[in-house]
Image (cartoon, rainbow, N blue to C red; front, side, top):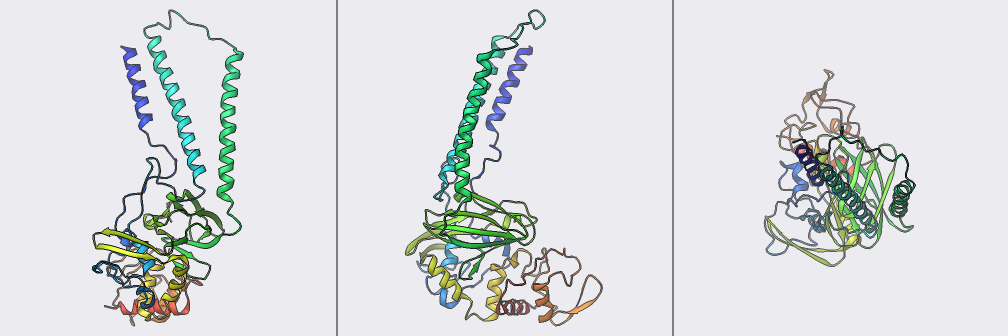
Length: 415
Ligand code: CUA
């Protein structure tokens, strides 16, 4: 009876190990694309004609220009909002980084080695359980050899050789991953709870990452508050962002398209919403797709035009429209709604403009331009009751004009 229980136990162990998730193996397959998923934070926001006339007119959605939820999006924002490109090779999403192959090979080599030894050991266990079944341990104790040169040399030399190979290839891949080429497009990455900001060499900032194809891109990254992690599965790039210091990553995109990026370090309530799009640009390429809003066709005008059009975007915008755009682009929508419901911070739809409002220390303050300006630049100076003091400062991150835009937008939301 005992041996059947033992055999069953071994079989169960074998099965459960074989079906376990490969822990820490890196890239999970991204979830299927959900249209507008990136914008799900501003559920109350609905339509937002964010683009400047200058930029927006460049490429309007084709095929009858359906009534999308985002009318008048600039061409580059439409590319960012399109469903993410997901194609897998069973294990991982297909890599689109020039230097991702070596880490993929390492991953496959480690999985194959583990699988080989796991199978070899499991088969041996099952075989010995079967071979020595019914043998009374009391009746016949076989003395085990105290020493066996051949055996010991074998189990020392073979694993050593395997380890040396793993180390050599792992080290080579690591050096490649941490050493960007001398000439690279540099992009500054700033993360905070709960948004990303990508700042390009000409000063343009965006909450989606736009990069050129076929050029090395070097990221200089830091965080305003807690640990975040920059993670693009298709690039095989994952790097922590640490407050008060800089960390680096680089990649060279090989295929134009729109991919998913994630925050891979748990950072609080809206951690799962820190998932911007990564747009790899190739000039002159037409991208076409269908979603619930109809048929879209956008001409990708390339990274250079992205930088120029994006820079021109805010110049001629009325302050309220600029504020509305920044509400999304600066990630205000992660914490503030515009439909009257409180989130992490107070809603922007208010009845209090021009009136006295209560602070948590009992004092009252007039809700006006000065109060809003101070709350953006030094959020902790005055605290509203019932909200955690968790907002990061935007000092130095907004131009005077942008501040005015945000103030005008909040003012316009008075009900
Ligand atoms: Cu940022 Cu998780």
